[in-house]
Amino acid sequence: DTEVTQTPKHLVMGMTNKKSLKCEQHMGHRAMYWYKQKAKKPPELMFVYSYEKLSINESVPSRFSPECPNSSLLNLHLHALQPEDSALYLCASSQAVFGGATLSFGSGTQLSVL
Amino acid sequence: DAKTTQPNSMESNEEEPVHLPCNHSTISGTDYIHWYRQLPSQGPEYVIHGLTSNVNNRMASLAIAEDRKSSTLILHRATLRDAAVYYCIQGDYKLSFGAGTTVTVRA
Image (tube, each protein chain N blue to C red):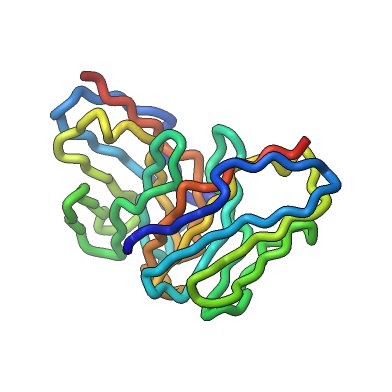
């Protein structure tokens, strides 16, 4: 299995809702990532987990809360989002965090905040 | 912050080679050069990466200048499926994507 699976593929939520994005990989990778991509812009790193521990938070607002329950799963909990948070949210994984690590990306969750 | 410079767009004919340049003049000795591409409505896809020596894989070749301040991604025979945004990234696993080069392939 060489895939990173993200669910749901599309999500529409109101500003008072709480929702979660899910990411799963079965490649034995020990590093997992969340990226955010606005339309026609490059992806931007949000969080990095290494061995199920948060190792990088790129100053992301607290309305985004990541969670790594085990080495195969990564969640992104969303609460009180703003319309400007509408974007494609990409999950990725790699064997570990080192310079030459190569990332495998999922297809993303397209999020719309109304 | 993105540290690489790439042309905004390039066009190619099908079955012809495509040479995508990238400048990374601030590269350090431990920075890798990564290339990813993103097809429409998909997540980025790993293409190739290298540190000092030229690299080849089934998708492409990566030619790295001797001073490492520039590199070129070579797609040997472009197909319509190679139409994508190609990102050249200098650094480590914390990929810092720049604007990339949009490659169009003409049939």
